[in-house]
Image (cartoon, rainbow, N blue to C red; front, side, top):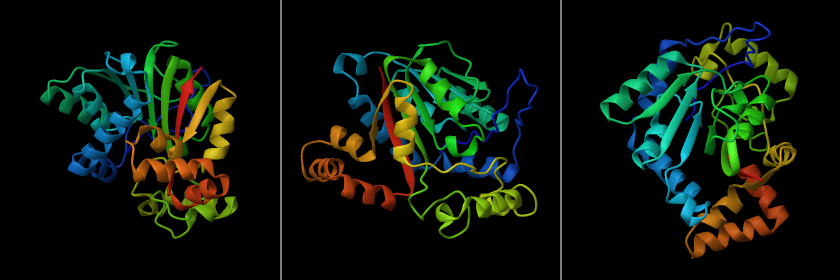
Length: 275
């Protein structure tokens, strides 16, 4: 899980970024990132993303940006596969953990403290941009998308996972059916989460403030020249021949079934290719 929780800071406007976090929040994600289940999930995801690339591209050393890298579990998986990995997170304690773990594992990963709204990399410098579980936490989220697109080379892939406003199940707030709350109610609980009730969001410095659907993100990314797939198209393309591939292909091909599938999944997933 990505853990860059930041408001849209802007150095030019003088907006400050908070680089610290509650010790309980840091400890929770530091420990969760060590689980075998987490490693297996990131390994499986990396292999599926690589299947989306032409074979000759997937076999070479790729430039990979992990945006909101947290303690570095996902970045380590890509580095162990031999790729050049660059990680950024607003949370300084988690970056320190990521750097220490990389040193212990003798992995050369470029970790930096910074914001997803002002990425520290050149235009068209990355083959893959990973943007997991971050967009919901950034008040001004559009610059995050713009930055992720900016750093990608033509043909580069963006992997994005975030909140799902269509599904009543979610992990951001300890409240039932929270995705479906009206905006006014969400603002109320967001205020409580950063004042008197931090336990509602596991003591996160910046709780989720945005709720997305695949359809809305597809429109937004299309404006930036991105070709966009949802979770069902992604799995249909990357699954081996068999029942699983058939099921995903069927869901992707039938709009009503595809919509119900979006409602049934707790988070939004997008894979987009830069034209």
